[in-house]
Length: 344
Image (cartoon, rainbow, N blue to C red; front, side, top):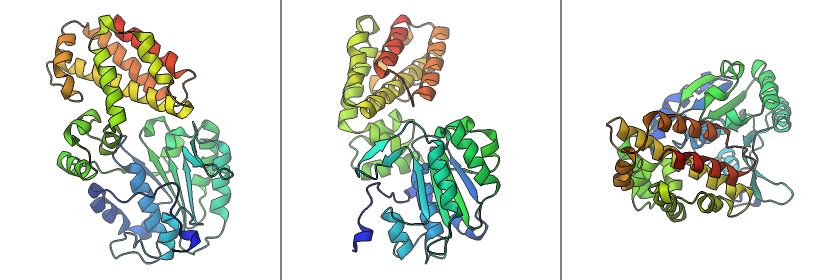
């Protein structure tokens, strides 16, 4: 393997088992591939992996008859190594070119979209196409979205933009209207459980339930460290009269800025799942996301006022939509926990 084909620092994902047929059906029509494709669907079902594999297939120099990338040609090797000159990735996870380290950004800004505009104007190096992947597309700021609109209105020949979004409704309608919408395939429960088991997840059914059927989220949730933290939070939520708001929220402050953001995202997700299960019990439905805490949820459901519970759950959903840039993650957690305790 030559130096230019050293493994990428941003790993290149394979197609997931539930994506093959959908990918074949889309790529067999590659001659009519749109200049802008918006892949949308629930978080954690593999949309980003699908987008990157679409990009690889469009750049593949010897694709299979069904349109899938061969994985062996120079174009595929460059893409997998993260060094294809005709591929650009605008993502929240970025590499510092000077330090060679990974980091995250809160939004995709106008400077990166301007760089994309310059990129698509250049002639293709390998004479296949020019491809850019933007994920998550709803995290472009308004200036970046407006700048991208100009490229979407007059795309150079052979240019393909692949946008990925969990929440396409948060994107400007002017952007969405210029993209072909593509619903990402959702795995059957049995397929998702089998895939998680193959990844070494010890309790795939529980992990999948916690993640509302999204296997990529389930893989993250199944991490033993995450599970230990989840058990701590659920034990506290199960006894609201003894819940120490300050002590529990202080757990958010462990680690650096990125880790605090991740911890808050987990905590908000657990609160959303917990209150959703409470609401299901109130509505005479069954617990779905926290089957390992069903008994505690049953006890609490008899004590909570439904209207107050529904309002609180709605506030959690609003917080999740804004949590890309919380000023003080620990203070956000304290506010949410105080409001939770007030329900009882």
